[in-house]
Length: 283
Image (cartoon, rainbow, N blue to C red):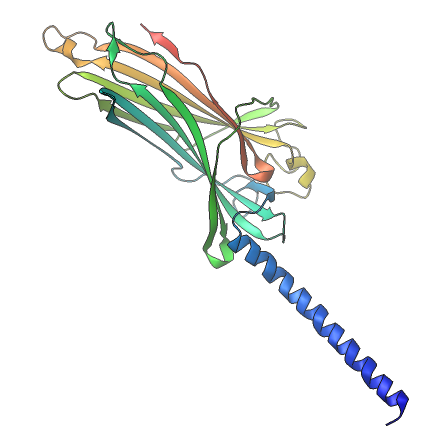
């Protein structure tokens, strides 16, 4: 065999090996990216928008995304009431690494802890403790599989929003009532009203050509879009002992507490949450 033939064969084998390596690299990269999303937990998210109808013109309203309950327990001899309010929002996103399409569920839990013991015939105006927790879960829709979830605590550093417009909610209200027990006669009713505002920070509230937080041809117009969630809690305290003899209004106090959270739509991230100071409107 001549040197020319041997060199030609060697070059052909080298080119073939290189082609195989390139092909393997191209095939493995998407698999590796998907593996990283699957096994290393939640990756950074980008290009998110609110889950929409197929015509991409309006956000999907989950049939009943809000739930709330209140329980009474005992701590250090005092009866305590805990109210937890939870709401779920769905986003469609892409992972920063691998550009993989994912569904993102963001659930915000608001918790209020209060003392059920009266002082001078009235309940304490300020809750003992309040907190907000956010659980974010990522799913691969085409595989119907959960990738993973993580918990976070939003910042309490307020942000400025503008060009906001209120969005209707199909089931915005929750309410329940608990009693202190032991024949005390003290009961508390908690009613929560949810409001949503979509804000276009770099334009007007109409959202321009692509709508606030909705998919469109111009991703840049969604980068600064924010969703503001406002929850107004009305608490009605009553002492049913007043109904034993001469029936009178058993209401002894009414308090208003609000929670405001700001969500960056492009990254499906709850950036800020803060409870307001209670406002006693009765007596």
